[in-house]
Image 1 (tube, rainbow, N blue to C red):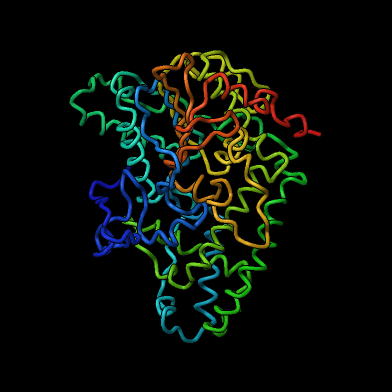
Image 2 (tube, rainbow, N blue to C red; image 1 turned 90 degrees about the horizontal axis):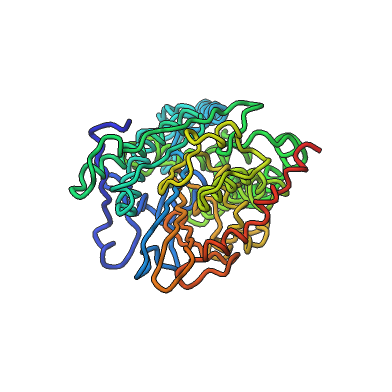
Length: 468
């Protein structure tokens, strides 16, 4: 659980309120807020790919509940909060720093901090900042859907990795705090969300729609290297000039391309290791343009790893998508891919007819699920020779879709003048236009047309190719 002394207040530059310049860090205060997420140094912090902390993504469509409408169903699908690097990466990051400090004799200017920098990042676990992100998410969700949340109980599931489970619990804490503060809410203790189901993450044999690992051709076959190849091609282009500059500025460092990218990754990970999200000196080693290039590097990894750039990427999200359909139409799950039949056929572990659902997972799985559902179908395959910003990529980037504590809202609503229920999808506060089912000016499709657009999902994607 988050520390009780955490103070989460956004501060801005003195002139930011008048001219719209991005917020910046003020000592002792946080860069993160419940409503808008992380906004400090947005010119770079919103370009850290999946290592960006959640922030409100610009939306051409209002996320307000349209006039004459009321929400009847709300499902949140969330990534866990900010964490330390994975175990293998934290070893590589530490080794890079140790080698630089051993081989470079003089650190000057913006590199001076490296002379006595101590590598203290852990491995895999949530940071205090990441814990608070999910508390904030629970608060925000309650406030958005309070008309339902006051009276109905959530069903909450989590994939089994520790950081995901902790994120789910922190979300329920934030939700409960908000509900307790609402004088109009019923205060029956059974009305507070709890973690109902945890699905284990095993190497083999456990079906889990919140964690991919079953499709052997995808995990170990030719599809498994597509993302690495795309990233390597772009890295040779964008990181080579940075590598040369760093090696010139740090005689003796002799950084490789991979180590150059490690130096960039140390910016977000050190930021998110600070409880208040204080900007790290690592961030100043690179230009704004270079951060856009780095963010694109991470987007390539997700696009060609788990999205439409990989022949089997979207198929990894089919199981959850079929579960979502079942919840929306209140009928048993029909799926032959990654669903766990034992869980999904039980009303205790997969209840239907609920108004509120919450699921917690990983960035890779969210990417696959969004792709299975047909989101970003209009995005052309991302080139590996130049940056394509999210605005020009049909709203796609890793930072816009699967940042730390990213969340998707799947809404059903009833509206005056409409006989059918309507569906809307909001990802990190951006309303998707739902072109796949001809969304209206509010980004809504009828439930019937939304389900009809999911032929790929209902056919099982390309699951038959997983074990060829």
